[in-house]
Amino acid sequence: MRAVILVGGEGTRMRPLTCNMPKPMLPVVNRPFLEHMLDYLKRYGISDVVLSMCYRPDVIQAHFGDGRSFGVELAYAVEQTPLGTAGAVKNAEQHVDETCFVFNGDILTDLDLRAMLEFHRRVGAKVTIALTPVEDPTAYGLVETDADRRIRRFTEKPAPDQVTTNLINAGTYIIEPEVLGLVPPDTFYMFERGLFPLLLEKGEPMFGFPSHSYWIDIGTPQKYLAVHHDILLGHVSLQPPGERAGDGLLAGKDCIVDPTARIVGPVVLGDRVSLGPEASIIGPVVIGNDCQVGSGSTVEEAVVWNGTSIGEKVTVKASVAAARCTIADGAIIDGAIIADGCSIGSGNRLERGIKVWPGATLAPNTITF
Image 1 (cartoon, rainbow, N blue to C red):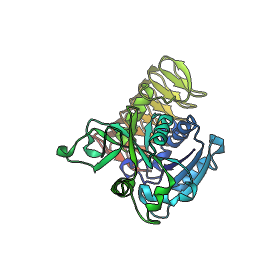
Image 2 (image 1 turned 90 degrees about the horizontal axis):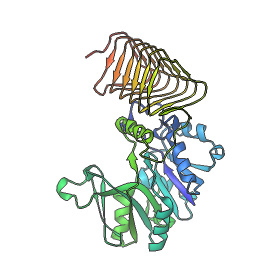
Image 3 (image 1 turned 90 degrees about the vertical axis):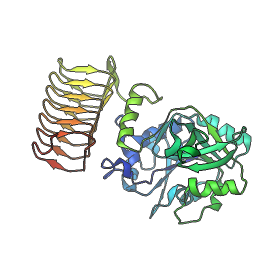
Image 4 (image 1 turned 180 degrees about the vertical axis):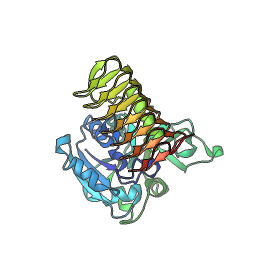
């Protein structure tokens, strides 16, 4: 069984975290998100994977190579310009010669792929779309089905008075290769607004596969934080790395934790993390490799990437501090997003959703509220 993963987007809603890194490579509990996706596919025996890329393909290829060290065989299809969801799969058509899964590369789910495939084959579908219920479907694409789950109508981002179901397109598809014959080559073309409505118009058998599996679109910094909370709190079947080192604590190799430091789980520490005297780590928290947290500092409900240094009496709360940042003594980071390579001087107070772009330097006391 083969899968195509769409990893070509620029991740504009995730900026500044995606300025230098494609969204599927952002660390989720200290591993690139795409690694978690490949592990998920392997659990269902899917080891033949095509990555459809456009933005920063070099970063992805340098990390994964031919995929063998990750237990899969990878092929790459690179778009010269963005081709949309269906156009991206069309660009990889040479690899799609049999029934194929297609995944959006920014969705974490524990959907039962085996059950979905069995349903697809049983009903003789040309396309099967995974569906998930949401409280407010107006920001998504509604999918209406009949009693046999055959799709009858699509409504993209409906107005409140157009909502007829709470089931939305969950971004996981099974397609038969012949449907790609309807997708124009080298053209921006979407599944949602192009191919699927066309197949419906032609009367081709398309079915929905609803489930109550865990599902989240990791498309914004707020959802990026939320998915870490969900993983650490056990809401999704994804095992964080590290060895159990205490109640609610998973730690990597060679960590140094001062005896006076306070840890309230769930907390994940990478390798070689140092926690100073009277530091407080209040979960859900993930701290990456080679990070330091200074004396009297607090990290709470936050994600800190590799190589970041947090000084003394610093607060980092409900925030993301990306890789190789330096946060000086007494700074307060509360509800902010700090991209990689930033230097935050002492006395700065970053709140209210402030975003700091890569490599920025804030002199002491530059921003306060």
